[in-house]
Length: 378
Ligand SMILES: Nc1ncnc2c1ncn2[C@@H]1O[C@H](COP(=O)(O)OP(=O)(O)OP(=O)(O)O)[C@@H](O)[C@H]1O
Ligand code: SF4
Ligand SMILES: [Mg+2]
Image (tube, rainbow, N blue to C red; front, side, top):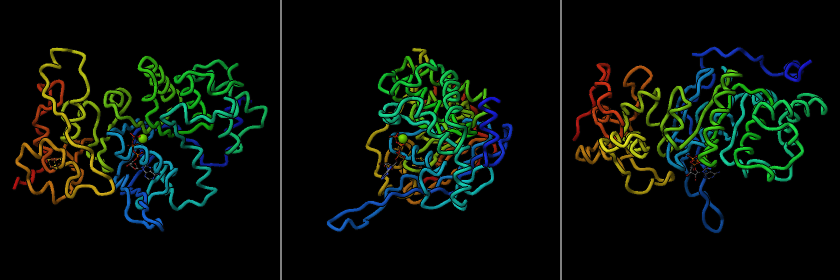
């Protein structure tokens, strides 16, 4: 009996299903995650960091859903709440039809086997006092999978799967390079045969020369096991390479969701255009032709976000349009701009018509007929 089959027969959790693209595996609705701020002698609660502030999205089975945004905008908190490593302040997270907030602890533990996480920092995410064998077999023990002997066999299988020598099992993390450590992190996430993996900036701490190797490994594993990913990055070009759909986050909110080609050719949100402006284009002619915007000013505090549209304090379009009042008074909801394309900007149509930030302005689609009229600038 292979270890794989042994693991499956010992599973008490819901049966694994073959990936069917299109149906929802993860459904996040009106998710809020606030962290209390304490101050003073008695450490009284004086406010909240609104790390994630009312976001909704779905991830389809077999899909890679990219999540991008600047540091501190709430990407990791979203990822963790999606697999209930963080308890939401409000809102719901559904996984394969189960509401994670209402599950009893045993049911939640069984469901957790189906969702794993790969962390950003391959140095701090592996316990330096544990061997590779213990690191990778720990989740198997936690979920009561396999005997002690069979777990070692499984660790060897997993090391081979991620491109490492199975003889390394008795070594410690400090004996490996960053790329090798991240492969160990990937093996640990795969140990319990999950369906859904939150990849929280899995390559950003690695040397550029190693990044493509680890990214390709994640793509290969996705194809091989029909995995679904929430892939977090701050680099738009990385997310484009791997994602079926991309969501852009700013200060705790999702401001744009769409297929990568659409979002890259004709972003509906001025913030997405600003992010794209920062991505270098290898073709010097196109690079020279491109109009760029540099984001000025600091990211506002998530403890006290700006009123109305949170981006208005840094928005180039707001300035260009003569500071319309609606941007400071009304929080723009995500609106459908085209099938599979939504943006949260009162003036998304203006953004769509703009050539700021994009590499091929001549390829930008014309304004779709389905777009509702934008509120008039006041
Ligand atoms: N445990 C916590 N307690 C208090 N505040 C927190 C906690 N975790 C995160 N935050 C705050 O919540 C906000 C969002 O943090 P988060 O780590 O989700 O951002 P991020 O987009 O992943 O950033 P990065 O790109 O730097 O990883 C930040 O302001 C952060 O300081
Ligand atoms: S709503 Fe106004 S401030 Fe916000 S992104 Fe759109 S133009 Fe800029
Ligand atoms: Mg993070």
